[in-house]
Picture 1 (cartoon, one colour):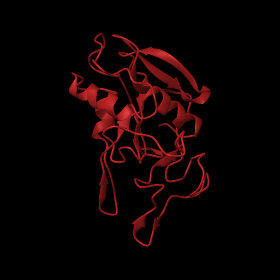
Picture 2 (cartoon, one colour):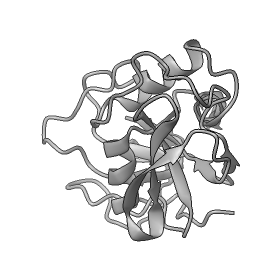
Picture 3 (cartoon, one colour):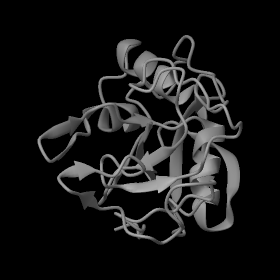
Picture 4 (tube, one colour):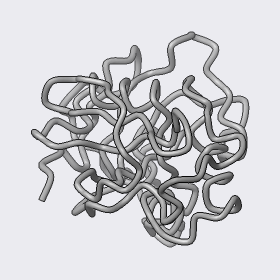
Length: 192
C-alpha cells in the first residue's frame, strides 16, 4: 500500500487551510478545499487558476486532490505498443483530456481506466471526475506531498508508441517507462 496523507491538506498554496490541517465536514457542508476528502495538493501555478478541459471546474480550477488509496499497480494501457492519438499533453490542465482520450482511444484496461472508474461519495455528493494526472500535474502532486513512497506512478502523458512519462515519487524523478510495465501505480486525481 502506498502511504499518503488522506483527508489532510497537503497544499503549498496560499489562503484556505494550512498544510497538515484536517479536511473536514463543517455544518454538513464539505470543506471547499477538500471536496472528496482525499489529500489535496498544490495550488494553481497562476493566481487566476488553470483550465482543465472536461473537469467539473473547467476554466476555474485551483487545486488537485488525490483519491484515497489503496492504489493499484497496473499496466498503463492494454495497447502497450500503440500510440493513442492526442495523448501527449504534459502541462497542468491536460490530464483529464489525456485520460479521456486514453479510454475512448482503445485502452480497455490500465491506469487511465482505473482512474476514470474512481468515485467517492461524501455527504450524498458523488465525485466521479477523477483522472490520471499529466506529467506536470503529477510532478506538482508529488512535490506537494500527495505521493511520496519509493514507487513509480503513471502519468497520462505518453512519449510515443511504447513509452509514457512516470515519476519515482520519493526522489521526484521523472522518466520514461514502458506502457507494459505493470510495476507502476495508477494514482487518481481530480481538479477543483
